[in-house]
Length: 307
Image (cartoon, rainbow, N blue to C red):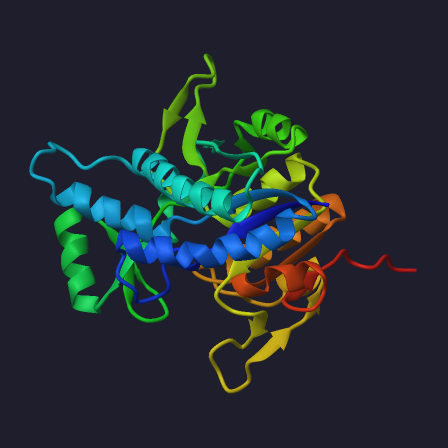
């Protein structure tokens, strides 16, 4: 099978951990173990989140006295692609000796008039107490919103329209390469209507929605979304919490999953299954092999025809 694997931010940093390089390097060993088990049997494309990393770089850039203005999010996204891509490539190289592996800096086309630019929803960076977050918002012109354990910066997250390097990724897969690409949803760019010239934009694209689009364009058989919980849950965090083991896109769309956490993952899975008739699943990183083989996670399958 051809599998597109979307790694959550927890692949490098667990919630509450310091964003130190050695911590991220240690955590990524788990990624190599999970992906290597699949790569022995399947063609693999790996995408990844970058929320904690791009948030850290944005704070550093805003506080750097050598800069006349902070670096824009598209360039910070490019930096995180390089860093995380290198960590993944090195670790997978050690876990899969002899396997051809490439980390590709990837751009994603978005619409300049996407309404998401007026409604920031994508969490980036660390969690702050409310008053600290409000002070940073006033000082740096940030938008903030409440996350599960505190307050975080939110930025625009326009919908991905096209992954620019899809043909190159397809060619690399054709010669047996495990491809790491579309990190952080891809570097967001818009295209000039007349010339087609690209311009970077101040946004972070949801990596799961980009992974779903990439999986569709690559004619993948399976979209695997890995996160820090073993299943999708209804009524998550309440006494009525229940795991969802099997669902259709329609089931997910009626689930009321929140925008800041499980919502984009369920939407990405639903889109891929609806548009391709393939399978998607959401579950824990350490259970990746079992998820693909139907022994763990939440499986999303096509709606059964009526009549």
